[in-house]
Image 1: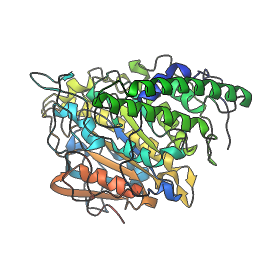
Image 2 (image 1 turned 90 degrees about the vertical axis):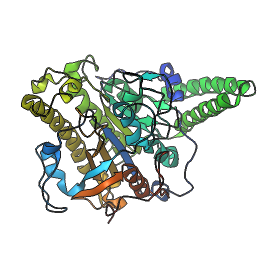
Image 3 (image 1 turned 180 degrees about the vertical axis):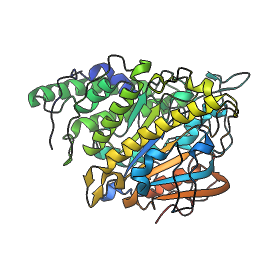
Image 4 (image 1 turned 60 degrees about the vertical axis):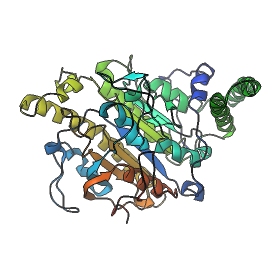
Amino acid sequence: MHSKFNPRFSRRKLLGSLGATVAATPLLPLFESESKAAKGDIARVVMMFSPNGTIRDNWLPSGGQNDFTLSPILASLEPVRDQIVIMDGIRYPSGGAGNNHMAGPSKFTSGTGLLNGNDFPGGGDVTSGWGGGTSIDQAHATMVGGETAFASLEFGVRVTGSNVRHRLSYSGSNMPIPPENDPASMFDRLFSEFGADQAELARLRAERRSVLDVLGSQTEALRSKVGASDAVKMEAHLDGIREIEKRLDLDGATGEHCSVPEQTLPGDALATAAYPEVSALQLELLTMAFACDLTRSATFLWSGSTSGQTFPWLDIGEGHHDLSHEGDSNADAQQKLTNINTWYAEQFSSFVQMLGSIPEGDGTMLDNTIVLWGNELSKGNSHQIDPIPLVMAGGRNLGINTGRFLSFDDGTIHNRVLVSILQAMGHDVDSYGELDSGSGPLPGLFV
C-alpha cells in the first residue's frame, strides 16, 4: 500500500466526534443469505442524489436499447456509455406521509415512505416524521461492514438542512444518518492515521477504548430502567459502540492502489462558490475510500431535496428550486435547468470514470461497484414522480448487463431497482421497502 500524509490537512482526534459516530448506528442483520463480499468477492454500492427533477426532453436518450444516442444532459457519459444503464419509466410508489419533495430521498434509498408526524412541515397541512425504513446502503453494510474500517460512509455537498429532505441514509425506521459536508473532516476521518506514529496510534486507540467502556457500561446500567421503545434505542446505541470497537480492531486500509489523496481544501465547505470544488473533493475521497477498502457502502447527497443552490460558475444566479417551478414556456429557465442537470451528470460521469480507471482483479473497481444516480422528482414544476430519472453505472462483475437504455411500462416501481441492486450484491430478497408487495428485480437488467 502506498500512502502519503498530506500536511495540508490538520490531524484531528476522533474523541470529539465519538458521540455522533455512535449515533449513526448499524441495524441488525436483515438477510440470512451470504453476500458476495462475504464469499471473498468485493461488492460495493453507492446511492447518489441530485434534486428538483430534470428536463425530460433534454434528459431522455433516443434510439433503442443498445444503439441509443445520449441526450444533451447525459452527453458527458459518452466515455462510459458501455458501463451504464439508463432507465426510463420507473416511478416511486405512493404512500407514506409528506409531499413528493419530502418523501423522495427516503423512497430513493429505502423504498419506504415517511412516517406520520409533525416534525417536518411541507406546506399547508402537510407534515411528516423521518423515513420509515432502512436504506439499501445500510442493508448492505450489515452484511459486509465488519470487513472494513467503516461499515458505510455518508457524503454531502452543502447539505444545510436537518430534515427529511436532507437525509439519504437510514439505519432503520426513524433512524437517519447525517452526511458529512466538509472534505477536511472526511479526510481526517478516513486518512488522518496514515503514516502516523504507531506508538501514538496505540495510545489513541487505548484512550478511545476507555471512553467506549464508559459509554457501554452507562448504557447497560440504564437498560433495566427504560420502557420497551427506549430499550430498542438503547440496543441500537450499544450496537454502535460495538461497531466502533470492531473498527479499532482492524489493521488498517489495504489495496494495491490505495493512497492518500493530496488535496487543497476550500476555506468554507458550505460556501456557495465552493460547491463544485467540494463536490470534486468528496468524489475523490469516496473513490480512494473504496480503493483502500475502507468501506463498501456509501451515499452521496448534493444539497438535498428542494435545494435552492445557485450556480454562479454556470452564470446562474437564481435558486435551483425556484427555477424548477418556472413554466415550460420559460425557455430561459428550461435552458438553465438543463445546464444544472448537465453539471450534475458531469459529476456523476467523473466519479464513474475514476472508479473505472482503477484496476481490480480481472477488471476495475467499477465492475465491482453499483452506482445509482437519482432524484426525488421527474418534473419540478408539477412535482411528478413518474418517471424518475435514473442512471446506473458499473456492476458488470456482479451480473449487471451494462451499455443499455431500458424503457419500462408505466407502473414499474422503484423498489424493483432496489431489489435488483441487493440481489447483485448477493442478498436473497424478492421485495424491499414498506411500500413493496414484492415481484423481484427489474426484468432484463442482469446478464
